[in-house]
Image (cartoon, rainbow over all chains, first blue to last red; front, top):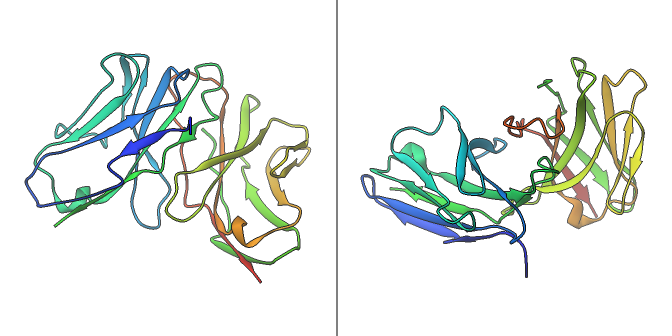
Length: 114
Length: 112
């Protein structure tokens, strides 16, 4: 399977703990996006990378959130000091710069903060 | 990006055509109409896009009105597996830093 993969698929954590999610994009895709989705809403943009450069961050991405894509391949999204409001599905998508609106999404990581 | 409005939900009988409308009355000349769908517990999936001509692929057809203020996504023979939330998005193609902006979409239920 050469699609976008995310790990873990589910994460339950206690408030105040740190969590890290990983996304492996389609190998030839140089753009990688992170979205957050809460129940009943569409995905909301968080940040995106072109190769290893983080080019845009949403105001939703508070200082507790950090994302990296160190070698322009996989990416990690870390949430520090989790809060109950962080409970959501975190989606990763990848694409090429040429066709940046035809994004390929992974299955997501569902985070539950108790 | 132009705002889109879609009905909250729709039902469709299995085997019949599902016609999903989208209004984008403020769309500008360089903005395309993109459709994605999201099946329960999965990430969104790209379906089709168009600028002003009607488009068809193996998944669906997209009909865009001549004034480009609305469009309809057509699933010609809906199956139970087409039950999903369908998102209509208007945005410039390859505009650089502008991300996809999803609304709440239309929840399509295909009924046996």
